[in-house]
Length: 428
Image (cartoon, rainbow, N blue to C red; front, side, top):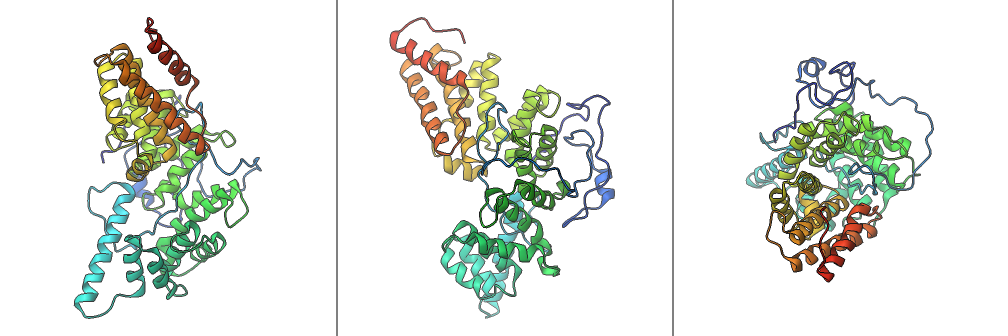
């Protein structure tokens, strides 16, 4: 994946580009400070303090959920997923595989290699390898049986059991037991647990954030995610880096410069959702000075990689700039598939924002069809796409998401009314 880079001066405040003081923190997976100093300047917010978790002032606690960075004038709840099992240091990813996919591709490749070696040697698979094979195939009950055989001696099996008990994979949900497993990994001094610590810290942060298995605490979730993110280290939890970007976009914790920093780190480390969020921040000047060129670069790259929310914002941008053919073509591609969960899983993005992206594209495609802008006029097709807006709005309401912008809903009623009455349409 080509990194979404912009000129060093782009988007920075007064005084030109500034670099963070100090190197990366000394947490798990820290990189050489010389490497950080020699690295080219990427997306950067103004200089910031070292992210070792200090004592922070008490904040009011939000409900169980937090805002995601999107249009920034509307919010929805964070739907977090467990961090998956990281590989050990000997698993080398294939060159050119972006972000977290490199980790899982390397892990699975090593797993198959070890299984083949043991089979050729006439030795039955070890419990962890056998359990991991079942886990990758979705045979969770069989995987659970294998992992439990070695739960006291194998940290990787311990990690997988924590994920399975928290998410209810192959067993009843038992978040308290899951938290116990993750705490054992995080607090262990064993070298065999070292490569699992950042992922365990992310999962514990999720538990505190959701108040599941432990008492809800946004403060503790933030502290654990900062440990997991390791100041943007690409070998740390990229999921934690992206999640921090979302966390700092919440109304209660609102710090858009911090949100920009963490999304830029996650984007440079291959995270697709943060790449789209970064484009939107540049587009609207949120946490960074407005920079349309940088915004379009991020949004187009994210859209090409399958970020549906980025596609929806690109459709809106093309339409408002009167590039109607571009808007209609992209909107048609964005609205082809209505399986929101499948699209979200494929892109590893939040389903609620996938739904919003599809709804945005459907709205502007309906406008193009209604007014014959960039596409042949078709009133019946326009009605069909207008109806998609409310299909996805209903999905959003079930997910406790805030509604689509009032502009969309108002123009929906006007558009349908004008279609039904065959009246002169508005110029929007």
